Length: 258
Image (cartoon, rainbow, N blue to C red; front, side, top):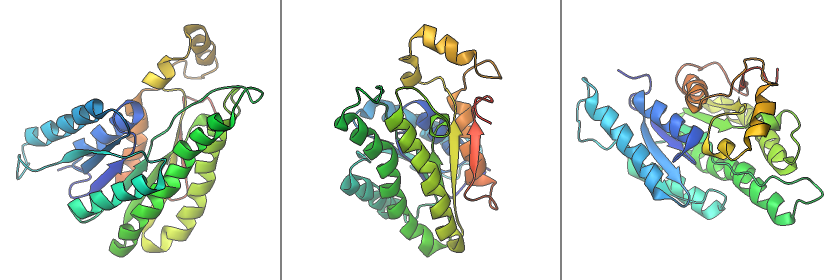
């Protein structure tokens, strides 16, 4: 038996990196998972295949042919697409228990060089999408008197990072948004929490030059970068075992920010 047997989850930006690790971990614990992607279906389809394979391999699986995951395209920075995605998942499975707002992008520039487009694109994808998906998913959660909303912020939403005024503002905004929504939805048995990763080994971080990576690593007390699976463990805790935790931040950053 898995910790999340019978539950339905949506993970945005789940084709790669942290989102992929989260989708796989929730699926391994028995949740059905809607694997959201924006532009590339291939990686999302691979995540779906892995989740379905894990289900078939479970000795206690009552129906090995049951659909356990599916990929769903939506640009969650677009309000119409984001809400249509949530509605589609609800119509398909009849409930939504877990929403993980993970999708995010960077457009790093110093504030002197940052364009309006750089600013707006990051805010729209990283912060506004959290609002769009949350306000859509909370309706079925309110009706069923149960929900777990988990937002992925960043250490750079808690402390400064050169060239990331847009990214830092979006991730800091997620933390503030989470606290208010946690307060408002608590009466419906819906918890809302934040996981704030530090520097994590993903495709996005791999673009950082090696010399800069070494400088960053030297400032991490644990002396290494995080793994996507370590972020996913914190999400699993909030989804499965944290019934009395809401409005909280879990920092998974190796001690970078305390």
